[in-house]
Image (cartoon, rainbow, N blue to C red; front, side, top):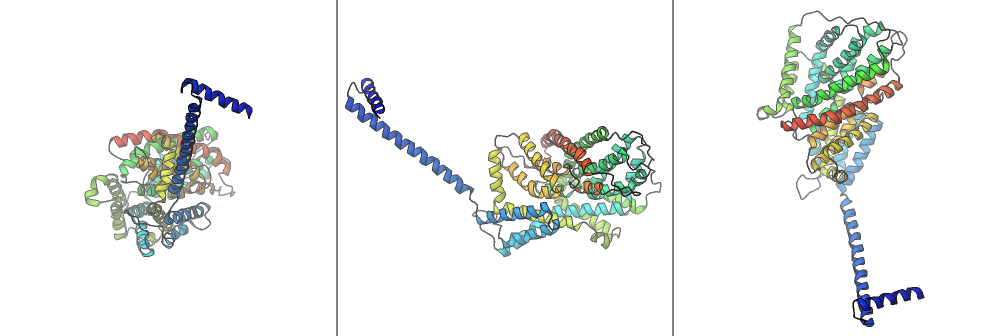
Length: 510
């Protein structure tokens, strides 16, 4: 204490000599005054920090609509992820929870919580949009192409030109799978392709490396083909719903096809390197169907091509046709009205997927209406505020790759794409459609596990007829599917951004 007093006295004397012209009493008074001002300034700074923290915590507090919406989102996501009940049943729960929890608000400020009656109309209106009509149109085209054997004849014609070289046969089957996935969905495409190659598989040894490469190649190519067109998979429908304005088919092809082709070639090389399918393999060539096209088959083909062309130029026809959902009515009326497709065909549509997509649309509208999506997106945007567009794309697509590998591609899209869209719209230079498109492509190419997408599930169930032994094991998906997913991830984040930028320069997308 004596040492401290001596130091204080020394400072007072030094201050007196330098400032107060030797007046020690004045020196003590001024030093005490400076000390008091410093304490007040420190106290003021601390209080300001505490007030700032309090304000941030107040901003983080959510209203009852957002709190209820967050609880519902977590609950529904868990049900979808674990598949405790069927996916479409969970989707049916969404409008029920939205109404009973009163999650929705009015669209204009000042926000008002909707009553249960008002929320009912809003929830069911969100479940039926032009995107659902597009899905129905896609199912109609797929049903007609399959029923009248057009898809199989097209596939066998192409495969008959592949010859007997294993590597050429493999890549040809993969591209046929991708093309079929574009038009009859990546659910039906692998089933059709596996039925076409059955004669080839029966003539191969049960332990043939080529048969394993072929079955796995078709599955992986069908996954990639699920990104090639808007009707190839449900996640693409969800992506279109989260784009404003929605892009045309032509734009989708412009961006997705180069990415898919590069992915297919990369996966083909991966399978050649890891399986060496050409060793000691003798292939029986596939013979094409030589029957002439009937009048009905020509009609189905022409209507399909006409509809796809209209979808490709839909933006130019907005003044007349309004939306791609209206164009989807054309094949519905022509095929069902003429009796080409029947009531039984209509009943056989994948209504579970339609209900799943409708529930996802309702969930997306509820999360947006409650303000929860804006709150979450704002928090994420603050974290990625210093990132470039490329950095944000890499971050989100990497996250989606992991999520979509462990849960279904469609569920990953339902959960992630609305968030991606909102974050993209909140950036300093908004690019929501770019991020949604890249994320949708990534949903399809996550294929590292047997449960990662319907094509993988179909492939793992393929058995040798004589022995009942499966062609593929889980290890085949892990050792080839995971590298294929990572390779496709690199292609998406590398090549798609260039396609995005070029399309933007042509005013294709926002």
